[in-house]
Image 1 (cartoon, rainbow, N blue to C red):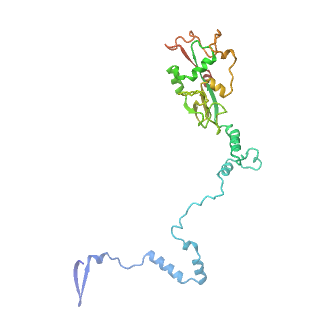
Image 2: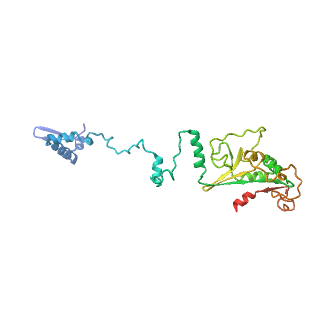
Image 3: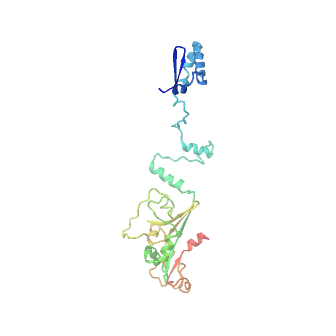
Length: 282
């Protein structure tokens, strides 16, 4: 203890230090007055008031229990019913008419019904565009279809043109529009087993296709081949059009003469034909 001064009062010596100055004098504070008031109120309670206070759940709860917590979601609540209610579709008159319940008891029947009723009504517009690559002098439809089976043998400009149309997708795992209803939006698709396997992609809508989409529409580009005609059970326009190396002198609708192609590019032996795409863009 550091003694600062010493005072003589009669026969007693008084000592004071710096620490004595830090001790606050004993005075009544607001907190102590409130506590004393609560104690006096408790002492003056009647037996009935004391019993009510002891049964008060709020006073028995801890500070953590007094915190406000969100209520737990009921286990019987169905979100789909709330969604239909918010959309104004839950109505006694419309039930069974506008809203049709799907039977999920049988899985195969349920998925078939889901495909026929729900997936057949897509939210976006669906379009399929067929592209043909026609070489100079080709008149046979079979020859033109063979060009799509070997795109790597065409011009580099045409391959770049295809690459800029959209995204290459695999038909067996693509969950959206594929260009044909027999392969689109289906959970029962099986990979095509071809006897003669190829080491390159064929975008004919059977195994692969070019897919493009935005918020309002989906567009699939397909280069038809002979196997796509067999897979989708399509026929050529006429037997004469499908003859091998036809010698018809009548110009085909899918071909252009060399005179028409002059001035396009230095290498004008091949031509891009995209009539369906032009029709769509128009």
